[in-house]
Image (cartoon, rainbow, N blue to C red):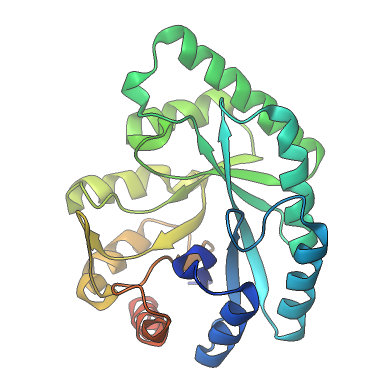
Length: 248
């Protein structure tokens, strides 16, 4: 595997970006996805530059910019500021969301409009040499494997891809099939162990995660998202569990 292992900053919304970098460095993590909601707001260029400078000083690489831009909801013209922010942080990968409700709740005309919006976003991404990746999540158009494959094929762009993560409300077999069939479109993977609303230690899902990762190329960023108890002190243990899963 050539996966890079990292952290999603929204795991610790209560910490500053600089505290997160210090925490990452203390446990040996060198890859981060910055969230746009708290830690790295777009349009705050000075703050973004300070983060970029501090991460460079500490040997931290930004894998991706975790935005809350929603295709079909957020005005298209706002994408430019997110792209600018991503480039300041040193990444060409932006996480976005596709729509604001499950795929089955989209009537035909609204779905058609959403897909057209996504194609326009993909064209902007191509012009700016960045990759937009849709979050794999309920309450968005990517809530099912079928809808996600439909979306990827409809947009059909190397600049419009996917994240993947298991759905904590689905069984292992369903998640495994999703992983296998979405792998060719996947850039980053959010790593956690949830069962329904319960956050559990990652090590308890070691075998499941090893099976999931067999479905992917081995080049994706594996990004820890949220701790079982929400505490920064648990990052070291969760990171060691991820290292064990990937065999390092």
